[in-house]
Image (cartoon, rainbow, N blue to C red):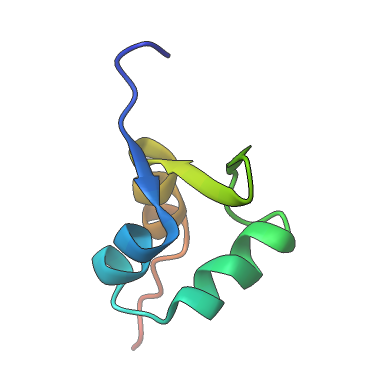
Length: 60
């Protein structure tokens, strides 16, 4: 865990090309694990990549 890269909600939103509110919703629903630091959240970059990989939708 010491080599884990933590991202802010804004960084996750930019990475996923969604709004910050969407990231907060994913965190609060338990779909995206996060650590609370004070009044803000931090998300491990590998967890974001896992979420995206598992959410991939193959249309057609």
